[in-house]
Length: 466
Image (cartoon, one colour):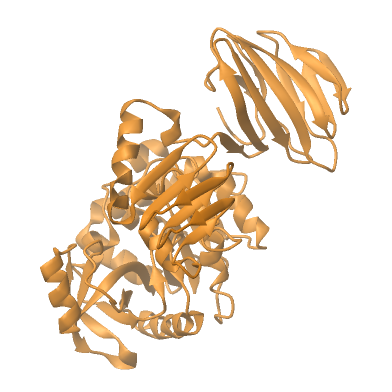
């Protein structure tokens, strides 16, 4: 089997931790590993697993590669989507990338929690058998409550190995309908996980949406290989219809079967869902960071930078980051997406970026800013190099705090060690490199009439950025 890891989501309902440029699948929300890493690691012990195919937004490519590398995984391909087109085109591209149409694809979103791995592995083995017979398998979560936030799958006749034919995919219900679904026992939550042969999926997609398959095929044929990435052709992929696997194929095919899965599944789609799966104290509080709780119950409190003290609160979600504080009742956390919408409307950077911004060469933290100045703490990985660039509107002072910096300024090259500094005048072509074996830590002070990140003219870049 080939795991296909779908990592295109933005996770807006977990703001302010999850943001456009650093969504929830790249965050360590339930363990020391990120959600992406957990998705791959939980396949350990499943026989016959090949290297995964990973699919992500172009902006997330280096996080994807680095996080897989950290757990010793080298994917067979990292496919970069120039824009989101929902799950059906993403899986079609993965199926076209597979070595053989007989390869069984195990399609997994990168942001789920599954606690009972033994049950999950058994379900995967069932799915593999059915997929090899030409079935298109989905995993239906055995519901534990009348949930209105999920779509449902209605089962039909029992098939071999405990699987059922699919009678229907149904939309998110109202509460009364969800209660009926739960009581009937004929409905499962739609997990968004699938297993099928690459050829079986492509055959059904060609039957029901040939335009999508043709657009995907053309975008892949014109793709460029960039480092470890397959960069789909933007113009051709933009012509691809956007649709989910459910709408494009699963609701139409007569080959769909559902395997019931009762393995402690959670899609961590909200702060209340994260509270459900988090470890809690004796009062039901899920706490991380420097938090003091007095006479408080059933709350989720996450502190990153400051001491957070709560007194006499019940059923709240409190999330503190370097640049934002969010407080909401647990039963209204779905409305966080409305906050993100307002941030985007007002073009606030907090919708997309954290104060600490990760780059392929390391990261920077915007420590302070004011009129015509900005101060950043910059960390460059050993052996990494920033692009050769210049700025039209700002000058920069660099002070080395730790490590060694190799600095290019026009035709001059200098080596700086700890406590040494240099000045980059406005318009100077410059580059920063860490030639050492330890991280380079610097303080950068920018000054000028415009300090935006888009004031960069790149001449050379090791990471293929414009």
